[in-house]
Length: 159
Image 1: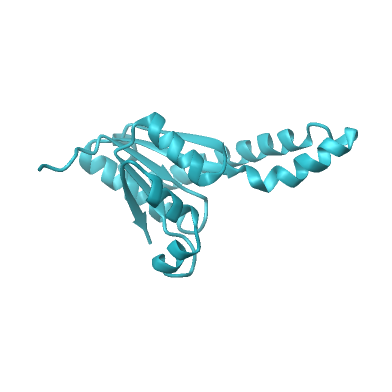
Image 2 (image 1 turned 30 degrees about the vertical axis):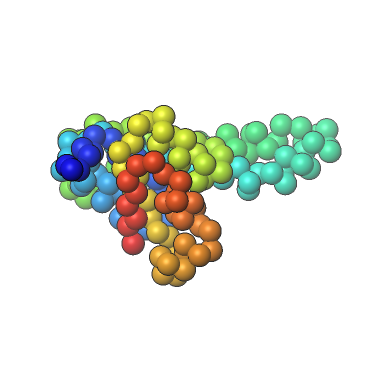
């Protein structure tokens, strides 16, 4: 049995302190395999649920949750541009890798899996974030654990 080719890599980042290392690893691997790279960040919609509930009760706040999410998406798109520019300056072969980036809204693990399916990713790369060990993170039901258990492709965690 021969290993499956890696033609498409999905890299999920959360803009934590570990994100540059996670993305750097994804760039290096995509370059090595000649794979297309999609860089994804997910705005967690749960952070805006209470805002939506309040805005539904108060007419003067109508639409405030949507505006807040839109502003957050724009902010993260800017953070993505800055992160990519910094990695290019750091000498990573980003210019040699076919890549794109995307900001999505939803529950992080669900959106990561949906985008991986849409993109037909062969590999998902993400951080095993947090200060706890990976096994502890798995026990506490983190996004990483949910992606790991449900993904239909390979998953790689960067620590």
